[in-house]
Image (tube, rainbow, N blue to C red):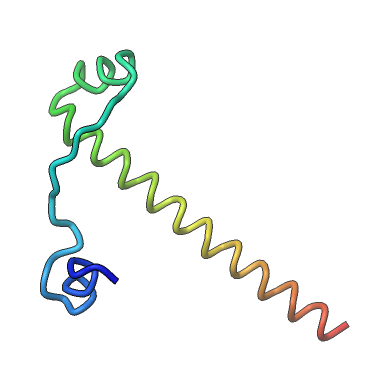
Length: 75
């Protein structure tokens, strides 16, 4: 585990800390975000929303797997 992950897990740094990265985007995608107010923050918000949706989907799949196992055991 990296030092940063250890510190985050221990609650010593915020998991929402901003980190600078270089990112290549399609020109059309970047233009769309930049046409809207505060485009850079919208990109972060869109990525965060995508991440949250994927995490919820994983949880739902895990729940479905548990339900299947319970049904198989009980029938």
